[in-house]
Length: 408
Length: 127
Image 1 (cartoon, rainbow over the protein chains, first blue to last red):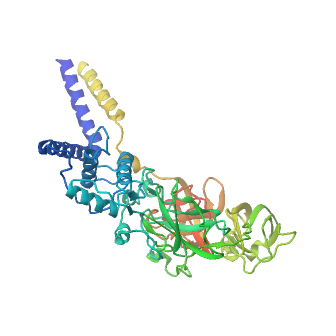
Image 2: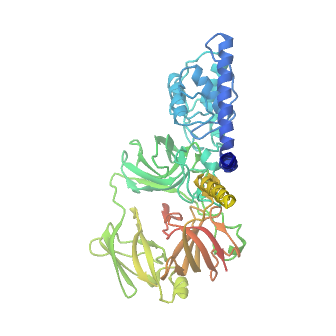
C-alpha cells in the first residue's frame, strides 16, 4: 500500500514538472504535427487522384528562404516531394532548412532559373505557380537575382516587378527578440544573412572597401552587415554588377570588374534584405529626451563608400608602433605622405600632419586632438586609457586602428 | 516515524525530478547579461554609420581598478533602467556590458571606420 502511495506521488510529481517543461515546446510540436498531417493529406489526395501530377495549388504571398516557416513552406515541400526534388524522410515539415534549399536549388536548375541557389523568390513563385496550374514542368530561362539596385543601369531580370517585392522580405533573423535577452545581440547561424553585432538585422549595410586604391581586376574586401551567405550583388556607381557571397555575413571578397576605367566609384550591395543605398545608416538617437541638446550635431552624413580605380595603386598607411613622450606621440609605419589626417578615440587632428623619414614616421601632440580637452576635464590626468589611431591620406585609411596606452 | 520517512522520500523524489528537468529556453535566455561595469560619462559621440552612441567614461570600473574608456550604447538593444540619462555627461552609469569592441562605426571621407570601445552595454541604470 505504501509502495503504491509513493509510486502514485512520484508519478504525479513527474507529470506536474513535466508539464512545465513541455509547455514552451508545445507550439513547435503542434506545428510540426500539423505539417506532417498536411503532408500525409497531400499524399492521400494524390493517391486518390490516381496520377503523379501535383494536385495542390499553393498561394505564395512571400519569398521563402532559410529560416522561413509556415503552411506555404509545407505546400512548397509537398510540391517538391511529388516532383522528386524534396526527399526528406520525414516528409514536409513546414520549415525551410538546408534540405529544402537544396531541393529548391535542384528544381530551379532543372527549370533554368538562375542563380539556382535555393532562394524561393518572385520568379520561382511565378514559375511554380504556372507549373502547379498546368500540372507539368515548364522550360524557361530567367534570371532570379536578389534585390536589384534601384540605380542599376541595365536590369538583368526579365521580370522587373521582382525588385519591390524582394525589398519587403522579413528574414527569420529579423523576428528575433531585440531586447531583454542576449538574442538581441546575436543571431542564429542558420539565417541566410548575419548582422554585425549591434546592427539592424533586417537591412544590408556597407561600411568600407579595402584597399581604397586598386587596379581593375583586383580583389577587394568589403566590410559591412547583413551580407548574404548565398548571393549578393555589388554595384560600382550603380552599374557594373558583380556577384559574391559572404561566409560570415559581415565581410566579403569581391573582384573589381576588369572593365572599369580609372576613377572613383561609389559602391553598394544588394541582396534579399534590399539595397545598402536604401538602408538607414546613422542616428536613431533623437528620440532619447536625455540627449536633447547634449549632442551638438546629429545630422546624418551623406554616406558614400568609395573605391579608387587606378593603374598605379598605392597601399593605405599602416601604423606599426607608437611611443609617447610628454604629450608628443610618434607613430612609425609605412605609407605616410606629406599630408595625413588622424582619426582617434580622442578625436581628429585639427590640421594635416606631414611625415618625415621617407614616409615612415609621424608625430603629433595628443593635446591637439579635438576631444582631448573635453575628456581631460573629467580625467584630470588620473587615468590610464587605450588610444586607438587611424591614419588617413590620399591613398586611403589604415585598415585596422593601432592601439596603445596613454595617461589622460 | 514511518510517516516522516515517507514524507522525506516524497519530498526527495519531487526535488530530484524537479531539479533534473531542464529549464525552458525562455528562462535560459532571460539570464543576466555580460560583465559588470560602472562609470561617469564624460563625452558621448554619435556613431554616424551604425546609429548607436559611443560613450567615454572617466572613471570607468570594469574590474577593481578604475580606468577611463569607451562603451557603446545601442538603442533597441541596450536595456535601460531609471533614470534613463544614458550618455549624458556627468551621469553615473551602472550595469552590464558584452565585450564586443566593434559596434560603433563612424563615417570618415571614404567609408565607415570602427571606433573601438571596450564593449557594448547590455543593460544600465543611470544617476
